[in-house]
Amino acid sequence: MDTPFIQILLLLFLSYAVAPTVLIRFGRIGAISRAPRGGSKVALTFDDGPDPFYTPQILGILRDHQVKACFFVVGSKARANPELVRQIVEAGHEIGNHGFWHKPVWLLGPVSTARDIIETNRTIEEFTGQKVRYCRPAWGLFNLSSIAYYQLKGLKVVLWTFMSWDWTKGTSPESITRKVLNRVRDGAILILHDSDKTAGAARGGPAHVIEALPAILRGLQQKGLRLVPLEEFTIKKRRLPLKSCFRRVWGVYDWTIRKLSGIRDLREGKSSFFRIALRRYRGKDWPMPDGSVLKAGETYMELHINNERLLDTIGDNVKVERTALIALREVRSELPVIARLLESDDRYRHIKALLAITLLHRGTEHLGFTAYDMPKGPLRTLISWYERWMLGLYHPGGFKKLGAYRDKLVPKYIVMTRQDLMQRYLPAGLGVGELDVGRGT
Image (cartoon, rainbow, N blue to C red):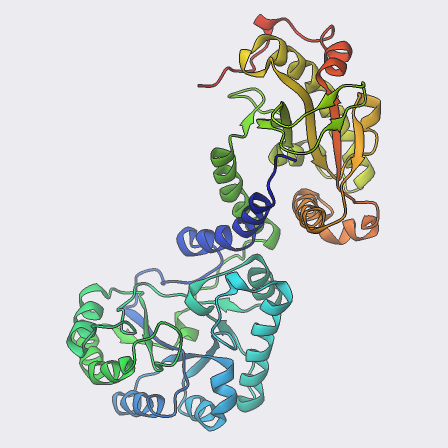
């Protein structure tokens, strides 16, 4: 087919990892990176420890200045230094989850992601007897699985307001102090590091933090800012439903992919059930149902469902069969529009067939489509996962409702030749002047 394997992988990676990170880091959805101003409060956090050399020195400075902080610990380091973990809690500081191995979750699948969070929580709770409430993913990266797990377990995701870059090469105690005090404002969450043994960290970086920390604490006091625990800092707010959060993620991703891959609305400027793209076939000769053959280099029209339109159309219908019937009705109404577009628009005059990959293929034969099984292999597995994910995300019954249909939800190619389309739907199509299909640019 014309959809290369690498394109499918890119699509899945963007939806699984990149889009969630962009939404949370820049959209400020589902995470705390600062508090509303008012109260002259600042929170201090430390990442990547505990470290047997640096962490005790930092604890001593905090004790001397009578301030509290939150330590986001790496699970494997906490497991190796249980006494340090206990010292942090006994000193009245908060403790949070920073992953077990400090691996970017972009490289972890759903099972590995859950294990990374679970093992760190288990380690902290074993050594402290306290339930973990806060988490901060390594590198500030997210994937769909990590977001889901944080939501399900009620973990509060805490990021930071700005970086002092204390963990990089070329820093000094003076530069760290200057960056923090120049940028800090009421409501800021400060981030520093108490270990230099994670990937990318400059050796000796925490020594600069230890030297800078007293000056930072004095400077905050001079600015009239109070260091408070995250417990006092966090703001209770209405939690965005998990599915709504994922839909927002998808909206960002979907718009980006459509722009990059040339997918456009069937009727420009108007809501359509279909989105379309012009593709060139690159596979082996494919015999079509009308006896013609789709050959390598020939063009076809790729059909995509407009998920927002599908959601609006199906409303509260939770039966998959009902969803399929509604989708078929929408398809039937727009096939005449496609037929007229192929006849009137020069860009589409050489199209040999319409083609889509869908789980909702039952009944499409009554509309003139022919369904073909996808060959078993990685591509079919990936597309099956992706299509089920999208149907569960936009279906009112969600993933739980779709579980009963798992064996039936198998992706297939559905194909209709140009000749069949014209014979079936061109006579019923509207006049060229009555259609608003748009010619694009």
